[in-house]
Length: 344
Ligand code: KG4
Ligand code: ZN
Image (cartoon, rainbow, N blue to C red; front, side, top):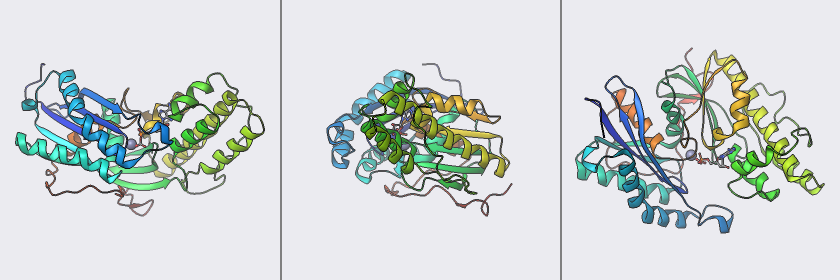
């Protein structure tokens, strides 16, 4: 492998939920980054239960992580000795699952005698977009995944101010639930997106969630209930998928555009599993905002995004994390609530 002189290689590990992700990122002398490897093992063992079984997730991370690391090293064409830093997610997520990657990463860093960085899972999702464009604050960040729907203002790098969040289901969770009730399979996001290409988005009328709110929150439970009622009334799955997707995309885009205007930001990073949705990308593309999405394979959970977040931390001169840092199920990223905590 050719490495620009002065470049550093960062290994990133994410085992926060049901994906075992290992990625390798090259941090170039000028601060540019390049994803050299991104390998993910998506656990299928949970499908039979209809949800993630935490203990099974932990065990499968233990079984898979060596193999996925080997694949990532092979993809990048490097060996363990070439690594300059190791990063792993410390939270939020399933504690047992997080611990596998966190302990593995710390052990690896210690054995290789390189610095260790604990990364925040949501910051990882945001920095996944650094694979496509340099993220220079100020900007807004919309994280839409299976577990999170958060809208942050980022006035300065590393400073997150919460503008809004879901009041009930996460966006991806709503896609998953609607797909399940319509018999479209799991994970629901890709299934809905595919079925929607055959359906009529105007077939089922959905009411706009939180219409008239002055804040920037989201709500998906009303859409989910409306989808269930439409399904019971005989709506075709493809029509239901197309109509639900349109309603979900509209509320995400409309609220984010309003938030960007309120905060005076021109750039929006949209990341997390739902950012893979084509209709969402098109709808954001039709706004006047500069919208940055993660590159292919970096929307859903992965290790490269954790290495990208660590690369930003290293560039910013952040000190490595203490090896005593533990895994945390609940770890707020924001430093406060908008507008009070947001310098313009
Ligand atoms: O970021 P992620 O891998 O996990 C969490 O951190 O939660 O996101 C997974 C979520 C799932 O709910 C999945 O249905 C959704 O992202 N998703 C999508 C698409 N691809 C994945 N939702 C809508 N459209 C997609 N194409
Ligand atoms: Zn995630």
